[in-house]
Image (cartoon, rainbow, N blue to C red; front, side, top):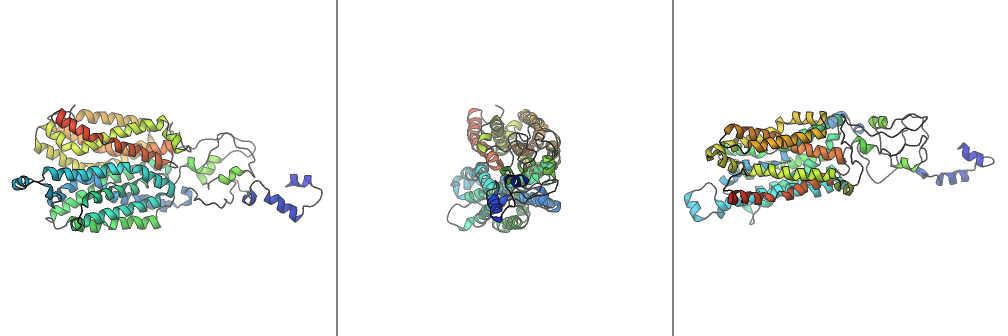
Length: 501
């Protein structure tokens, strides 16, 4: 103001002052004078919602949000992968029994050929759709936020439960669309919960492990239902179960409206737009400040610098030193996708996901050949049905510790080592010990793999583009899973059922 007074001769008239204000570089949104050491100011009125910082939400509420997300992911995120558990119930209920030939009916086979193909098709459509849908889900998440994405998920879960409940009462095949809707609803609520890892950045790995563990364990929903169905001698029919299951989407809708955040929590790097060059020592009246997001105590410390001279900008730090953290934060999604950071993890994910799903779908067939005994293969399959959800729970503390206290490079190397060990154990014939060890290692590896991919995506690409980038990774892997049909045909027709080649 003094510099302005020196230009004139005398007092400043009201009209001149108004002219000065209207032509100020920041207009009516100019920064107010403040003696606060952190330089707080009133943010401009804008049409977009500011990123959510953890300091804006109480610790108790953030704990509640994480806990609630784990609960609804446990009930809905990946229930379709409990197909092996619910399949016997559907067979007992006579689903697709009309596909059987008269000869098969006369022989009294438990499940006929066409019936099994139809049931397996139901699962195949759901499994592929779950992965392919990750890309549009990510787009919805990035554009509208986790609340809207989760509400869309509740809509699909409701449709799936209703289609299943009334499948016998409609004139068309409702089972395939029912399973498809359940498969679509799960990822909407699951992927939308990843941003909660930023509620407590120092424990982000543990939170992701809890969410992924809940996803893996959700396959036990159908296992528990099958046990109740068998215990009640078929009284607790699928119609009764799925009508009761409608409580789940209602619960998710309620917590999304009253508990969960409307916008994603952001990493420190996204809350603070760190400049590439030293900031000016006296930045008042510059338009750059109009784009500053609300800062917390953490981001204030990240921005702190002596008042007498500018300092080079520093990158925000994670709880542990991680050379890959923030490598592509703040860059457009297209630019991120064209880098080796994306291409290599996408290729790794496609190969490993295909291997995992192929093992889940063919474990009984593989061990029937390797153990030369259908009875022993059935025993391994039954053990696998129980171990798969339990592995998701047991792996949570291990995964959390690995992601929070080791580098991402170490985690990826560990994944490759475990995958190689699983491959070796999976080709040892006539060994129940190797079979059990293979299953145990597999059920621990699966949640570690899924969590590591999401953790890598968050740390390298950031949550600003997480939905699109992570969605494209999973979508591409899902499409690649169609090669399972070729692998299955090659195993049976080319190698006579031998899974070793």
